[in-house]
Length: 150
Image (cartoon, rainbow, N blue to C red; front, top):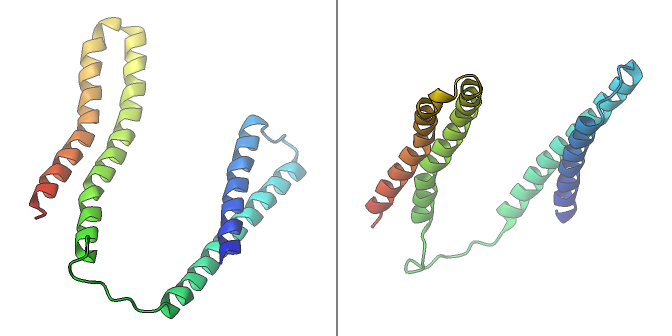
């Protein structure tokens, strides 16, 4: 099983390395070179997906063959509490992702407007703050939900 995780990790690192290499040295307009790079990336993705499927299948077999352990009711965190904590963290995660998606275009547009009319800096800062406020709303919802766990 560990060799499958290693194969998955190496494939992912090779994919990232290929992307960085192609960003630094873009391929020439030669068709053979472009086909070769497409083949390299295709084989790498095929190995990555195959390793994921293999890891899933082998992982399911190991999970099904595992001995059943009895959890004492007075132990620290129960499964229900753990799932509740994960569910409470989801609003913050999604709100942060949404804020990141919103701040990108708003920030780029703000810089473009400020370059042309510097007197609009305050107005663009308000728009940027509104986009950033999305993350704060998610954090507030998470804090309110944490208060409900008893």
